[in-house]
Length: 248
Image (tube, rainbow, N blue to C red; front, top):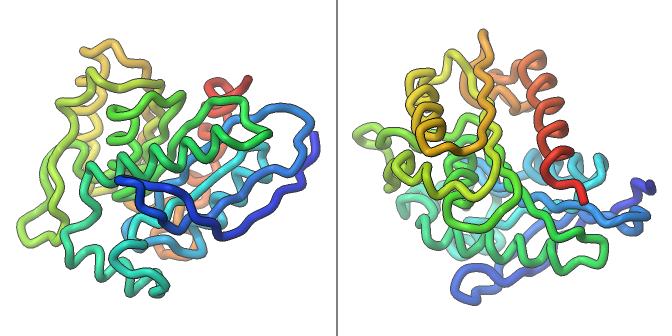
């Protein structure tokens, strides 16, 4: 299988027919049909680190795309400025997120190298949004990396205007992998347990891992929160999970 891929900024059709920016890392000629991954960026935005994640998926044999969820609020702005603008607006509306992920998934399915299967992955706010996408759209796999406020509301004073999603557990459309830190406050291990119990009660396939000595953002290589042992094990689990659920 060839690992040659092209990575570039493109335009896709998102929620409501809006044309939005996205970053695509797609295989040129893998020699077989492959699955696709929608990478949902974290609250700091559509940044270099998230684009690197998309390229990592392409290197490992998947077509990947990162929709710029803040594009409408701040086209052409730096990731920091765009994130600040989006936070001031209360974050990305849930309905719009679902529409943008649906558009990204359709782009992946349209590629000549696609096998028709699509997964999602998100970190931090993107983890919540990955779960939201998976209870709203017909997907094949979802990964929630320490998604905050799937259980519970944002703390008082938070700029985010979002609500909990745990009551939508019966609507989960695909297997879910959850990766969490034992020292995280959003979500706490107690929040993870609540979600685990809700999914179990609904009979939904899921696999959760909580890492000791890790807090929020333990995957983020450019932040003090980075925990190599947890992150490396997490990546192994992600690729095993996608290998099982996104293969032809």
